[in-house]
Length: 102
Figure 1 (spheres, rainbow, N blue to C red):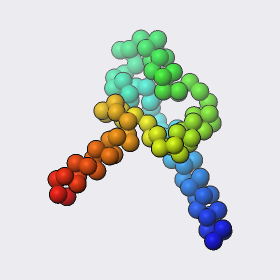
Figure 2: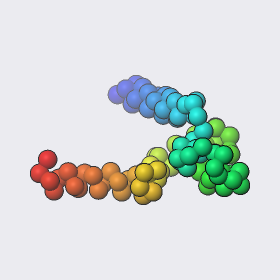
Figure 3: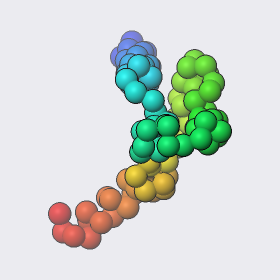
């Protein structure tokens, strides 16, 4: 039983590192994706504020630990599309799905 539990925890840990790393090494500038326009149209100060607000100026290891701790607490972040907490989005979608009879 303990072997399965330890194996499961190791698998979850590896999966979390792989998913974080996949986002980390994705091509392109995340800030430009958030802004939705090439960075030439925004001032460098505005882009720096966005990077700081999202913690993108911190080292990747620190961001991973922060992401992991927040995820374990149930904080899944904020939706880029709606600017609402993702946890609320998931609950809302589940509620709407249940009320539509689906």
